Image (cartoon, rainbow over all chains, first blue to last red):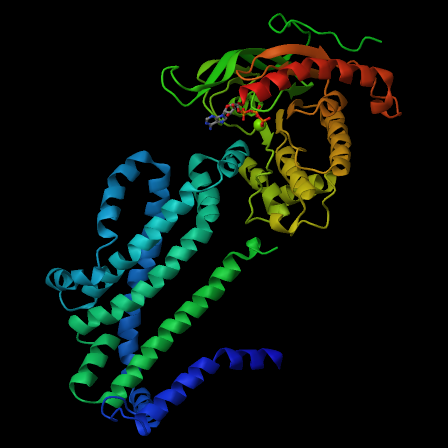
Length: 251
Length: 278
Ligand SMILES: Nc1ncnc2c1ncn2[C@@H]1O[C@H](COP(=O)(O)OP(=O)(O)OP(=O)(O)O)[C@@H](O)[C@H]1O
Ligand SMILES: [Mg+2]
């Protein structure tokens, strides 16, 4: 009972936003063209769900985001750990990371289109590149900060260098890695939509721009809301996953 | 009556097998080619007998930890040789177990999982591993806390878990770096008694670093006293005390005398160390 009340409280600001939106759209100075009212957006959403369009486009988008993101997590973590462990790897990879880090990844969209065409591949590669750096950097920093006594303990208990890397350095760096992955998750959503605006024949981003161009503003707003909700849900689920993974930190 | 027999450091030709032989070991931190670095150890030669409890006593910063890390194989030997019955030390090995001052338990593993870690490396069958881990957890009186994470334990309990983890793999040599330094006086005393009792039962070669004179006299068969930095072995003392007598060893006159004697030797070094720190 208390928990439900708590949840209600937490989402109150959201409800207030909805209310303000409704007031602005119906009574306010903003025309219904620029900001459709809540009810008609809801109706548009319902019909998009019914004809299966939304689900189909969601499938395309989420497949691309998930593939690029997961590849980035696996490869980025491995690269970061190797960088922290081997000087040679660090010398080669570090300059590349430094160069790419401040660059807006969306600037690569045209290049991706030329290289990989309009299909899934161009988006997956872009999302992969965008998600890679925060993961690499967090894994590298996490691994460098590992208490050396933990590594020494493992070695004196009979662990080889390789198993120490996987069984000690990786879990010890995990809090930091999981932070980097959270940033990567946000990047995945941003790059998913923005790349589909520019180069795609399907997906959320494509749907939004199509509906906007066709003047179907209610439906466009509905899709934007769905994307926002998907990002929010992914972040929430990820937060719960992190809390479970790091339960050993709680006293 | 005379429990202390000071001996010159270099001519220590003691009976019994050699547990750890440290020959002419020096160590520098920082600097290159001997220039501008900190000399932590200066030509240390020390023979630690097999199955003895050997305490390393010395002022802060004299290189006790460094010497222990060299024996453990964690830090490469720069000059000189360290040898055990298994040969020259070139890296870490499970026959040289270590307990660090700051516990160094794996924080993401429970007590049981921490103790199991070394046993998995030994390749024992799963059932045996579990039994053995529980046996050692019981030995350090942590039964009931098998599934607790280190963050849920007190400092003393964490230290006991670390000791169980190291003892479980049954190392020939046990290295301990001020393991009770962070504990309160009572816990510390209980732990000292337990450690000595475990030692009586298992008879490993123990090197125990401390800067507490009482602790060294209470625990050790022999005590090496190190000088302030750069660390050298200044004195080696035998602790000839009949431990089988049930009375409180710390209250006996020979214990008190030996403590006084050692404190006299250590004090000069401690003063030298504080001067050096300025
Ligand atoms: N990683 C390091 N880099 C540079 N100097 C170091 C390093 N580790 C130790 N030293 C120096 O070497 C000397 C010996 O250090 P060590 O930790 O072995 O002393 P210790 O006898 O264990 O001291 P304590 O009783 O305070 O633990 C000290 O003067 C210290 O400043
Ligand atoms: Mg020390």
